[in-house]
Image (cartoon, rainbow, N blue to C red):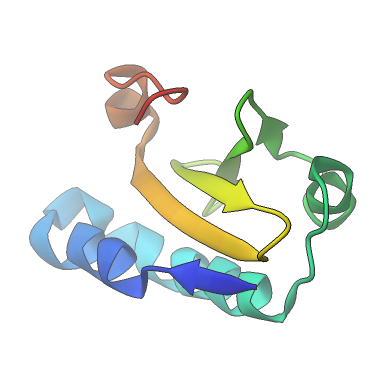
Length: 100
């Protein structure tokens, strides 16, 4: 998969003191996603059983032992993952994952 963009993840743990704990897990997710070949929501679920599949090809991943949430939009035909949000559960509660 092509993941856009690592800079979104880096900005979170660099600019947010509370995000420092997400760095290693976010990088592990990123490396895994680069090697993945997700052709459908079912293939994402096969890789990450705890991923939440939303409408409009959005997926929510729980990372760092379920301390952070990562929201992505996936273009399955082109194998592109767009990172839309990363944050703690409290920060996630302040957004609407379907439209972010």
